Length: 424
Image (cartoon, rainbow, N blue to C red; front, side, top):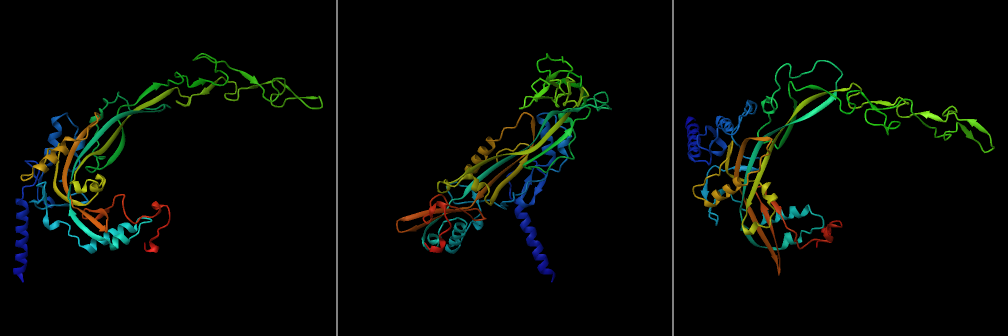
């Protein structure tokens, strides 16, 4: 009973030794093991120390655990590298290549057509599969995770009371704020938070009312110079046109009830007071101003696709979301090109991805980067009937079908209900 258990345990140890012996593409001096990728990666200390090379960085960014890179959700980790017989001289896994028979190919195409209005399945069911071609595609990504900080000012009416000003302690700089409690998971697409900068409150005179709390009425004092106004300004009564009397058809006159026979009425906006309460300071004449730090964490992505001529017509977006196999996955403060001992193509491809690094805004600082290279299996299928033919692609391990514009059984350009019931 014990012998099989020992044998199973021994085989597991051998497998782990085989994986650990593989020299993974990464940074030297790494201490964080990545079991799923069978290699090593950069340490937390390496990323933290690298940030000090450019400018002093606050300790707030060092709070989260910088974990080792894991395969993306739509990718598999490749446990070893082996030469792949292709013009690229690149890496792949023979045992993980897609092997599709005729039944699977037709089922995938029929399912794809079933989601298209006015597309008939007759060609997919009956046309001959003329050629099946493997044209794998390489996808390289460089993700730059950064933190951006900028200062905005917020104001509100000051109604008295104690303020958090510089009299207490000096005002903190924008990069001196401790935001460890707000720090997100690395490589989140976007997160924003707003924090009041301590000791940044000041009381200022309201510029709209010059600290008076009131502004001249724009209706009855529109022609006055700034800072001056007149009280008891009256306007002509709109009911009697200033006569004070209302004329009737029988020739009689009655006293206007709107102006009580005076012919003038007070200003409808201010009641002839000549002033209105300032809406900016709510009549207080003072504004409480504070500085707010707007902090944004986001990931800038650089993506490149290297496709053979057979898959050149497929949009890059299809390959980006396809499920493939990772050939490398490195994470560091600033990633360098990956190195493949047997592939000049992949070395050049990795260098091109790194060279296209997204520009970082001047108000932001880089936290770390992640560089991956993946191979996406692509199968090009050509179907023929007499002198007609069309091609489509089966992309990734999720087997997504991509069919360009031409398909021989399309009706009414999608403007009418599906005519599949006609068996055309």
